[in-house]
Amino acid sequence: ADHKEELTSSIKSEGSGRVSLSGSGSTDSGRHDSAHDARWPRQNSLTMKEWDIPYDELKLFEKIGTGRFGTVYRGSWHGAVAVKLLHVNALSDHSVPLDTFKHEVATFRKTRHENLVLFMGACMKPPRLAIVTSLCKGMTLYTHIHLRKDKFTANKSVIVAQQISQGMGYLHARGIIHKDLKTKNIFLENGKVVITDFGLFSVTKLCFGNKRSARGDSLGIPPGWLCYLAPELVRALRPHASLHLPFSKTTDVYAFGTVWYELLCGEYPFKGQPPEAIIWQVGKGVKQSLANMQASRDIKDILMLCWSYRSTERPDFPHLLSTLEKLPRKRLARSPSHPVHLSRSADS
Ligand code: ADP
Ligand code: MG
Image (cartoon, rainbow, N blue to C red; front, side, top):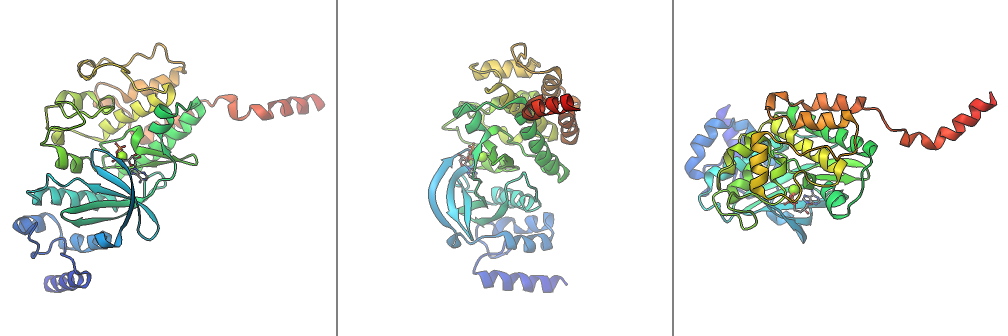
């Protein structure tokens, strides 16, 4: 049976004119292949080929933006797509990062959920490493909240938070930790939440991890990232070593708390404070004060639970979802029909 698989593998890779993922002919990853095969069942590497997109088949149009991971382009591959080209200049000693990249791509293809961006495939031939997803049409929550200063009513915030909890609950049930949940990675398409960039964090850090980030400070902290980090992550921050941060499902829940705060308050927690001050406070268990926040007790309780200093005290997403569903809705949605009701009852 082994031999047969071998054969299928070589036929497939010849057919596409590309090097198979676990192929021994690859000069880029050849050195580590036996170790790679031992950790990866052969069947897995074969099925992954279905998600391997030849770089030449992709059409790239304008640049949408640049993030920590790489550069995102609007592209075309059987329709409109977003292509995230990873910065691979740091991958001169390929094998280990490439393995990680493949591994992360393998987790992507397990995701099918309304509130998660559609993963379409990846280019995995160094130096061309790219991730292809559906193109999100709306704006990110970040753009809504911080750039356009759109106000989210409590009701709308709850609806958005419920959808985030659904998507995140699904990811966690699949054993995937997002590691970079933030308003910049949450799109709103006609009222529907679409979460992007789950599980990609290690790849970014593989590309940037050992270098001084041009955009961050000496700890490699990009602006706007810190307030999503749970105390245990903040305490583990070391210069240029964020790859080894102890991310977990509960650190995703902490980050969700910050998103919930942004939705309700229209700004980041610890707004205007320098990174050192935020690190010191969060590391000590000091939270952003909610004294000036106009919201019900229930709503603030969710925030405080998600931001719990002890990770074990943070709720999980199914629990958050049911809490959000139980929140009393303001009469907003019903108010237009209210007078009608009144006149009816007056009639009878
Ligand atoms: P960040 O998430 O920190 O903004 P990214 O590299 O993930 O950095 O994204 C760069 C830009 O590309 C952002 O403006 C982001 O909104 C946009 N973008 C990322 N993924 C998609 C997508 N699937 N559809 C549309 N735009 C996207
Ligand atoms: Mg992103």
